[in-house]
Amino acid sequence: MTGNQKIIVKENAVMLSQKATTIFSQTAKESIDRHGRFVVAISGGSTPRRMYRMLAEEPYSSAIQWDKTYIFWVDERCVPENGSDSNYGAAKKDFLNRVSVPEAQVYPMPGELPPKQGAQKYQKALIDFFHLEDGRFPTFDLIFLGMGTDGHTASLFPGHRTVDEKKRMVVAVKGGNPDVNRLTMTLPVLNRARQIVFLISGKEKAVTLKTVFEDDQTRLPVQKIHALDGELTWLLDREAASLLPDTQLVRNDPEEYGKEI
Ligand code: 6PG
View (tube, rainbow, N blue to C red):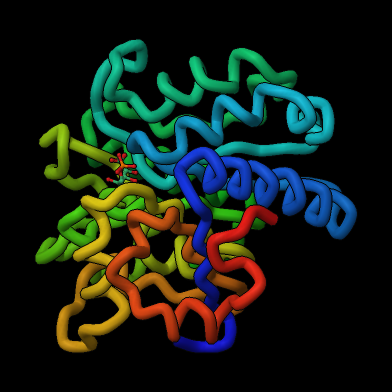
């Protein structure tokens, strides 16, 4: 494990979400202090939803400067926005409709378009937002990621060529659960964030996490996440971390192991 990577283990899923919400809120403050805005990309799945709901509650909802916050997605399922499988739909319900973020600062992936067209449109939105020159990639202040039991992250699935994408920022892909067309950011975008935070909870993730940290031979998509210039945090609950050797956790973050901070 390299120096710009750490593991934080929280006692349970609630504490994990509290810590994630604190990271969101603190990074927002630091980013706005430093460069006047906070640009975050969030993911789908069930794990981050408690954090999303906490963001709409005190003390976080008033502490965050929503008028200087810009929200993007790392991936989206090409499903109706109001259905239960839409990442944007879930975030709207969980916090976007309940906080004062201006609608123009929320950038859902266009899951309603034919997938390839949707991917191109979102890439164009990134180029415009970050004023990118040809061949450049955006730098997000913070990116939240999840991990599937098969080792996927965002919608980058094992064995799929989109995992090796080097040029495009957003691609279309089919797979996952639900097994539908999806749009996903690619590794060159994810790895350039100032802060990358994995949120991983539950005992069903424990075996995969053990493989991630102990098996160099396996190249799961999740193992290809590296903070090129920033920091990578693995935020786990005790069940997810249950098969990781204590020595590794203690060596990496003695104060935070199993404690609320
Ligand atoms: C998605 C994702 C995906 C998710 C993981 C973990 O939209 O499906 O962004 O990468 O984060 O599958 O999902 P859970 O949190 O539900 O385990």
